[in-house]
Image (tube, rainbow, N blue to C red; front, side, top):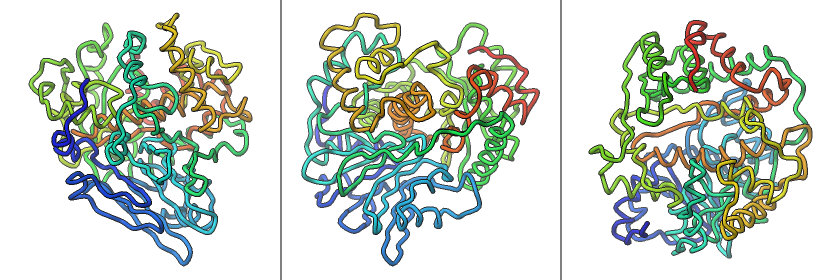
Length: 478
């Protein structure tokens, strides 16, 4: 993959970095790249926001908050303004537990200045080590601003056979394609005084809970999410034979939000799944489209869009035909609500009989490579081990999380916090995307369930049945 010229980069930047931001304590903007972006001045920081980004600014006597992205109250009775003030003025990150959306938050107060993001990490944040304070929504945006080139070792890793064999393309740890740029991991914040990532959650072990109590948390979450989405977006939801997206559809429909539906074709559908999808689409009503995902469609041949998707993912993935083809069903004012977060609730790694007895670079690498890559080449394994050693340090990984399964935390913070966030960025050039299950209260409540109640497909099928018994009984094909 070649690196684009300055003119190509400037032309693709507006599309590649939609809804994003760039912040620094003294950064001259790259010529032409930020010409139409809005500038905000937070004490000791300049922030540029993409023209389509939602920005909310609150200023108190001795505190200042700048929130970029969708942010709403998903739990409790306080307002967004009250909760943001708690974070900035009081230095209380527990207020974030009540918020949903896809947002980054710059909070300054007496206790210091910190950058947070939503619980899932859906609004990716990348920061650059060095003398200047600098962070952004996209790794390639931050790199371009400082003239950083891609790291040869990262390029070799990305282009390796082992990377392709994994099936799901994302880099190990919090690494990016740039030597000095790292992803901010969920449950950590970027402390601008210390200028490093600092873990702020978990504070206490999860409390034992019941399925009914978990469902009641979901009721509140879906009610508040539907209330936020309804006047703002035209939802697009994926219909598959799985459980995560189905529970999301059921929860939103139960609270008055439907939308249009689509299904990726080709190798995305398992044998027999198409018939199930068709039955689900007939039951749901409304518009449903089967979308081809191949590289030979006219949409997938759009070279400027291909470059935009590469930039959006920081060159960690190739040009996305999936994004290009999904653009065919995108609508103005639309939002793609993905079932992301569902596998956090139901324990992805545990469902696949993985273990994590000791948190070490080697153990995390073994999980990352999956069983598909049994003997990675020495250089490939070394890159991953080094990345995870840095991840353990920067993400503040303890030997064991208090009362939590390290597999659950690693899946949430690594797989979802890096790959999931990158996938949202990858789709943004054609269609704004959000994670359907994005609530620390939901995750914490699920972690308090007994394993036999949580692991597997039953939990989300039962949740679906709570809202729509017919949809729950249509069968599972993935």
